[in-house]
Amino acid sequence: MRPKLIVVEGIDGAGKDTQAERIASFLRKSGKDVEMVKHPDLHGPIGNVIQGFLESRHDFPPEVQFLLFAADMLKDREKIEKWKREGKTIIFNR
Image 1 (cartoon, rainbow, N blue to C red):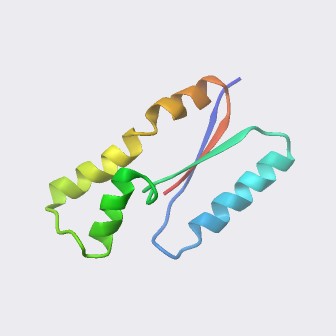
Image 2 (tube, rainbow, N blue to C red):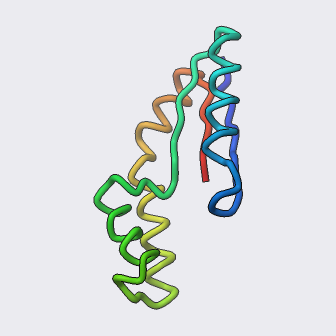
C-alpha cells in the first residue's frame, strides 16, 4: 500500500486548519487511515521558541529562523516515515 501525502499551505488565517480537518474527515469516512501533522507545532518545545519569535518576544537572524522551522519539521521525521511505511494518508498543515 502506497502512502498518500497531502499538503495544505497558506498564510495565517487562510483557513488551513479548517480545510485540513475537512479533508481528513472526508477521507476517514471513506475508510482511509489518516494522520495529520501541523507545522509549526506551536505546542512543542521548538514551536514555543517559534511562537516567541512570531510574537516579537525573540529576535533571530534569518538563518536562525530557518533552522528553527526546519528543526520543527525534522522532529516529526520518524513518525512520518513510520506512517509512510504503514501506507497511511498523511495531511501536512503548513
